Image 1 (tube, rainbow, N blue to C red):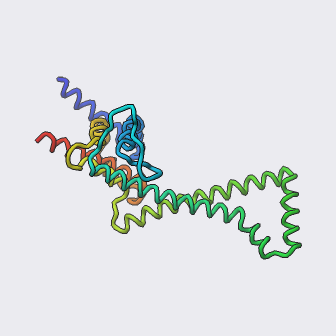
Image 2: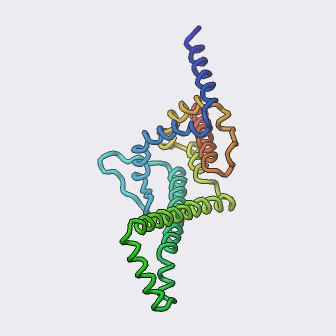
Length: 242
């Protein structure tokens, strides 16, 4: 048996083994690629004046700038802008929810309650702070309020992205997956495609076709984008060979 047959057999064995894994377990391989390539991707973002938290960035001064073409810069900027907006509103919603649970009852009593009610509330708080049960209750209340605030913030974040998709926008994962199709050179594609395709070929096609999750779920959309990015890398390679 030749080397080519051995290679084919190894790939087939890996794919058969992959069938037994859950679809989302395959994401770890691509997370590792992004983790290893993160310094280069961060450099690309900085050298092209893209900042996550403000308009404009600072390029690294000790290395030649990595100039991406305008099309991939536009995609990255749009994704970061979308994420920045969603994160801002989700944090505001979470903070308001936390503050409402923690401080609103006290404010209402102080604003509308009688002097006796205010005194009763203040005395009760002091008493609770002096016993272990009261202290435990305060801790549990804080944990509950934090949980609710986090939950509201997360739901707000997901709602914003769902609304954008319903309005006809591609989700951020699919936007990033289109980068290999930009015309001309693509630094992001050159950085990721080789390793991406190497990992992608070892994953059974059933993983990418699987829709066992809700089609709107984050995990399904990420898997779909990973596959789309790989397919677009293949198309880019084919075009470059012509």
